[in-house]
Length: 619
Image (tube, rainbow, N blue to C red; front, side, top):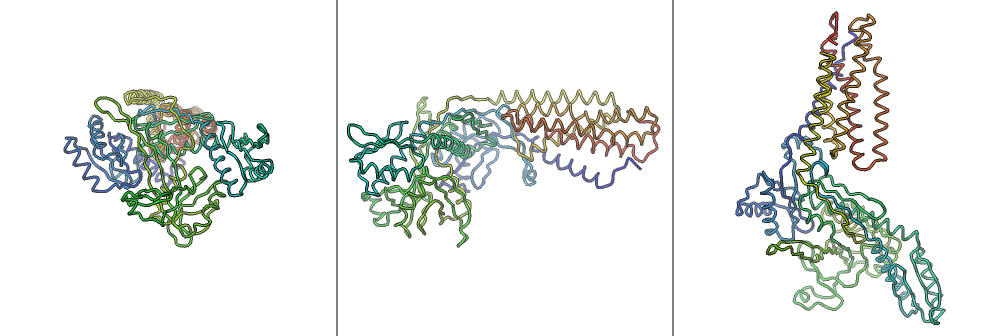
């Protein structure tokens, strides 16, 4: 009776293995070449668009495998990449600039598996193919923008406090120079600027008898500007990648001024470059209620006003004076208005932005204010076999809300229809604009053929290592070896299942971790089986030998696996991307092998030999 498991342990093992098989299964079905149609802002994905796309493809003789519609995108699946490429050109011509038409590879997982939440794991750049960009942030440009802001803010401050000055000029990368009429004005101005702008260094000097105040950004403030520009650009790029429909992109900092962008599965590199390099700004403007929109539509736009369009196409007249730009926003989060329960966006400004906005909204309570999103786009098209780059600017009013109170460091925007709209607006405010220009300094394309070769070689290495271990265990340990082989098979299934459940990215180093796990997974069984052999040689009965083998070998197995797991955790903590992938698969393999090699094999051994009178063991 010592080698029998209670029913709950068999049930636990059965449930774990069943769940593992279900979640590993989606990786068998592969992917379909597809065209993804996204509507970033203003446009809608609906049945009419689906019909329009279907009719255009039918006229072109490009029958899709399936067209799927979701809330944010339309996915058109094809059977081969040639139809996919032809369909992209047709749909771009049909839909124009309003929609983003991008190439993609879509998992062909059956619906019943998707209903259970079972999805395939992602493949990295080295397996799936795609593009790699190394982008450099223009830090001098970021500092120049900061200096321009300071010059504008100082000009406003001196005018409001009625301090006379001759000129305010900016010296590129050298700061701002304020020329005053006399020493009294300079002393007043210096006191005001020192009080309002603590992150500026001030130097008082005379230039040909004229009082001058030289202002430069402190080293600490300059470092913060550079760090903010880098992190803001990373956030912006990460959200722009969503327009490409890329699964599991890699966007991370490299050094102090560079960003690495890896887009697995992206085949349209030109489109990727255009979206990643686009520049955008965010502005708050007051709605002009003193003049007629109809007059503006007729061509009679009043002075100091400008005609815009809302997302639904409705015209709206705004004042030219900008209340605030997105440069001052440090954070934006969506939520619910505490009084009405309606969707809202909560904005946080930096110190200078809070002071400016407070002054400018003081007299505007009860009046509507608009949020304008301005984006400069470009697109490369083939015209008469020549590449022609088109550039255009999109100016769109994404929100109009009434100012309820004098606004300061934190305020909220209401008037939104849904919580999803609030989340999108927060996203645009938080990461709608690049904080500094970026330049692509390195570009590499990994073709799908190279990815397939890596997959095939990786699979072959796993198969060869797996078969070699199976043969050795079966020949050396006989029936017990076959049980260990069964556990090893389920161990691989569990590794794939866990990677799929975590939606992790499998790379070539990750495959190396799985190959290493195949070898390490049988270590536990080797220790157990050798301990059983030793007990049999000492004259113990077969049942007692099985029990002693598992019990006495457990501490050794645990020590060996824990030390390896510690090394894997250290690799994950201090390593870069490829090393992290190796560490993740190794860690998962260690944990699953402990379960299958100890608990799983003992359950099978107990079913075969437990409770029976046996004279010898086939080991």
